[in-house]
Image (cartoon, rainbow over all chains, first blue to last red; front, side, top):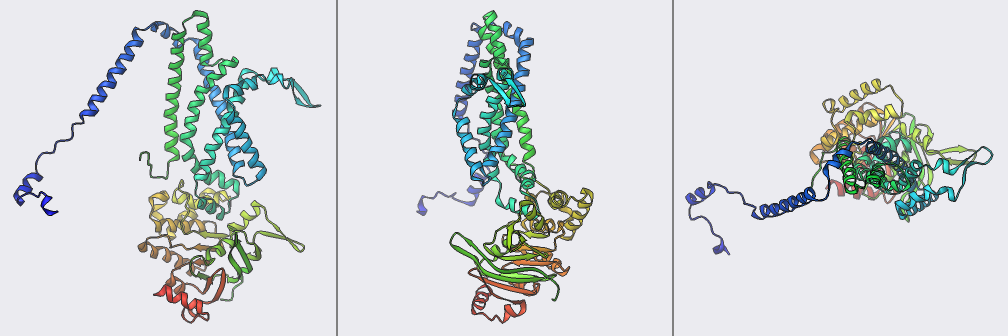
Length: 289
Length: 256
């Protein structure tokens, strides 16, 4: 084998080679592929610029009061539905790991039903609840017409929030399970009750695992609220539609709506990054492989 | 040692599935005493320790600590299982130090020590802080109180864990192999803190493989094997002239 190894002929040779200038690899393939992709992007932008969209109209409606009202309603629905979803998610997750067989089964059935049926279908069900229960209330105390209560807002919040709870409960459960059992024991040995252990020791650590997926779910909730346009909740998409039914500028108004969804999602992503940093305290902040 | 009895276990049995982890274990520890429990792994030492503060539930027998029956309330000739809150109250007086430290990673060293006194004992946060700083100084970590556990060495983390246990002003501290997860060069600093603690009159039950600590610091040594308490007596005698041949075999094996 030794004759296949090519060593410098002398120490002097070796020394000369060791001090030659280093030339980095040129990555020709990377440059070519980048150029091709940039060209395609440029063509796409050009297509939109010369296409049948009147950008002036887009600009005109970008800050229209109806659109701004829609943004507010979208944000409001995102916050309300997501809060309900997270609350239900925590409750269902705790039920699933409670050790109480009845609560565990009920939690599983909840997840099975509300994760199983399409979100749009659930919205329609809540909105049309009056067809099943014309009135609601406690017999002898009070009674109201379901139609009066089930406004588009309430129906959308219940529909979106309850189905979200089914997904979020799985995120919460995996977060709770990610905390080492030694943490429960350490909390117990300093005399904490189960609730204190959960609140002071386990949940703060579980948050670190839960924030990225919950952030994802908030972002998908922003977009899911557009489904509420179907039951006449006046969020961004619904209001954009109201305008284009009147002026037939369909594409322009869809552009306006997409612009605002992108803005909201961008802002939320920035907030998520900050929250992640907060819950990563005490860990050697590893964010990459 | 003729103080009052602080821990008393009578005929304690515990099984995991079909495996008998504790088989009629009886033991007494007096106030101010240091008791080391030694024995091969799987002999039930840690399980016994964990039964004392109810991290494990016993199948039969009884354990008293701090003058109370642990985990049960007697009504007539029946023993009723205690509620979560009652068990939590009993655990307050019993500190525990784990093999793997189990510090709260999202809290600094100081916050780890303060957590119990403020949240559980409802101590004034300022007073709890003062006390915690004293305790951290006592374990030699006055300069590390702002550090998170991940920034500390294993030996430092274990010393914070001891300070955390002391923060609850316990009358008894259980040590579950406190030096077994440490790099060899870090063992001494933890044993030194435990040595000081023993000197200050703290009652300690220590599951350990450190024969030097058992010999020099503890008053009594218990040898367990196969879930049974094989031999129990003054450390000097048990470690040098054991009565039971199994104790002798074990000691020969670990001292080789």
